Amino acid sequence: MGARHLIRNKQWYEARFQSVVDALIGEVEFIRVGSATDPVLQNANDRPGTTGIRETAAILHHARLYVGTVGFLMHLARAVECPCVIIYGGREAPWQSGYICNFNLYTPLPCAPYWRWNGCECDRQCMREIGVADVVSAIRQMMERPRGPLEVAWTQSRAMSLPESPSI
Image (cartoon, rainbow, N blue to C red; front, side, top):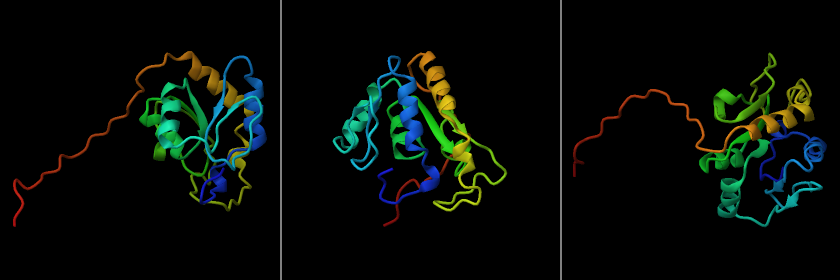
């Protein structure tokens, strides 16, 4: 939430994140990373604004799971082989920017994906429809999977031919 350029349509609800933490007390230890201006989560190990990219990557590398919205931390988690539960809503679709190894929560409304930053004619119905129970269930399902190398989706691509030697 402390991003330089706010994209409201990517944000889930602060109270719902807190409800997820509350629902999993005793089952899961949450460590919160991010911006120092992000809302505080009670009953979470709070580290916003105190970790750089390298420290955050190390935390994710050793974490059992990352839970969050679409953005940089989702990609950083994938880079260090950390499985994720990602709350998409409907701004963009998992097939556009996601990873098949993640549990992607997406609401396929007729208007989605719509790629708007902040305006939404449906008052963010795509985000409203993703409830706390959905996220808690996704976390529990992902926690049942063994931690190991993440699945990779491969696509066929054409080989690019390069010149044998540059002309000078």
